[in-house]
Length: 241
Ligand SMILES: [Zn+2]
Image (cartoon, rainbow, N blue to C red):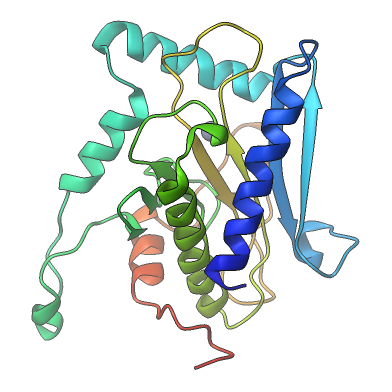
């Protein structure tokens, strides 16, 4: 999709979120997208869903607690400080690419308002996180320039994903936001997760089974190696190249 069309999706997310949050019975709104047969999708096209609940799911309760503890201790959002750290990290590139200069070890793409990176704690092979440079709690708080920048970063990231194995890259992706109708959440920092299942090719996926299911996820590749692979890809879609 072109950036202008993705912008319409971003604007729809904001509108739906705004309308749902007006219902005082709701506590959490999950906006997400599933893409690809390998993700169990019944539809061949990527499709977005929004689930609105009168309770805060466990994963979001945990993210709220952790962000709150950090905010109370430091007076800044955890993801603001994490982003600042990632933006200052540099590694040298091989001599053959010296013209490129140093590069970030984990940032894949960035623009004026958003950064997409492979977080150091990533467990899915090419997992990424999109973080807003400005700390907001909700998608409804993005101004027009930020909405356009979100469309831009999503387009550039997903083109790189498609180019990785020259396939329509499957994933589950979605944004995490503060609970609604729950008082102020100054600790919360909007972000979006991408969890793609593919490991080595368009057909070889990672399985979260065995030890991983019973005890804890194991990493097949490092965050740095995944970021370097994604950084090296073009932002022209392979079908259009
Ligand atoms: Zn999250």
